[in-house]
Length: 527
Image 1 (cartoon, one colour):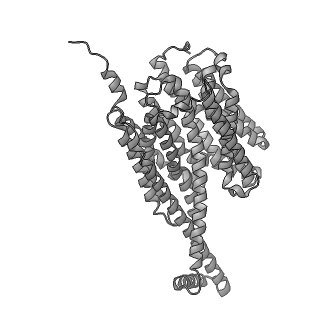
Image 2 (cartoon, rainbow, N blue to C red):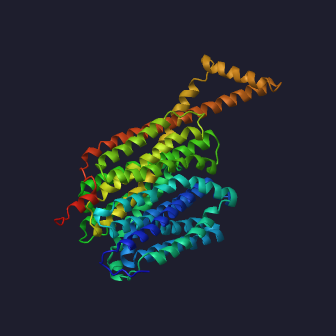
Image 3 (cartoon, rainbow, N blue to C red):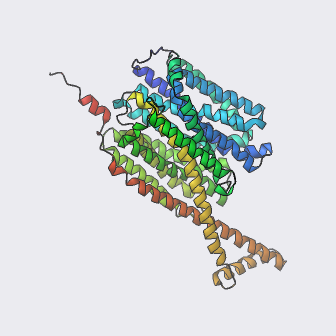
């Protein structure tokens, strides 16, 4: 443990080892957050809960994470990075034990656990902006980008295998395994900082409460909207109205405050504002792996989570290639080209996947997933570089808070939008296909006759054969409508990325290498 007086520069070795342990915590915390969402169905079955009841467990975790990303920076400012990291890990593990002991309290437990676990990625980004000077943030921010992205690639496989062998509460058992290790590593490797209660108490906690309430209510609406048919549910409109009122009040308070909780003036910086907008588009692109592919494989091939995970893990192959290559690119060349390349890779993956039909299985998705992972590496690394360009360490709290707030809100919003679009397009395609299944349609009639003859060959009951043929044709039609709807969704994502690509030329040209530029400005001693 190395003491770190307030206001003093962070030694390089201390900065890197703290970043390492925070990165491990961010990866494991991200895996935990996603695993709890993926495990909801199995956990509901084990506890005898309905799908609607189980959905509130995931909603509680998402809402709490939205509040956590806003609280991370002031907590670190008051108590130090080591205490926050250790406390977040210990609290996550303790609540996992509570979840195993009292499964009837899972909604409340998941809310508290989501808040504690949601602190870890934000603390890592906050540390990268605080401990490294602007000229040397390239690699630390690349590592943060990887740590916040890698869980998407491996969460489905890990959750599926854990559930298969340990049952619906495997995710809580996993939390009990990793949290003590992260807590111990943070305790020994992170710096020892004094408690500065004056900083903690000086924070505008009333403003935070209003903002957090608005964010949490918005997340409840986004996560429950599609399941509850949006405004058709009586309590959805009042909840949305309350969320908007809270957000409006919080924004007004931030703009009027002399020392605001979040410095919205940071949005006046073109690089930060455009970076935030581009980060929002990333949430839609990432649904290719986290939402669309699992849904398609479950529907078309009837795969379980661990089987789906064996396909989605190919996303990691692209990530492992994309993140270091983008870092090397940004150290030498114009970062706008790396951002454009990331957008192009995402668009290519979406267009490739738009060729989907009901016969697709895991093998057909491997190529698009590798391309998407490569694009994620280039896109997210470049977005972080532009968004944090020139931001001084005191503004790092606002930058990390807003960036991660967009990550949480964008993920829930993009999931809701894509799920709604998928349902609408499936209904449209289904209606059109069913209209063609009439006696006047020669193709449909011929297909039904062919299926009837096939089933008649194995059963002497002509009525049973006709019924089985009709059921098979109906299932084929449903699958085809679903495949066409997915194709529309992938095309829509590609079009959205093309729109956000128009913002790339508005970004300034950064030095080919920020660190090299800083070093080159130091006068050389004459030989």
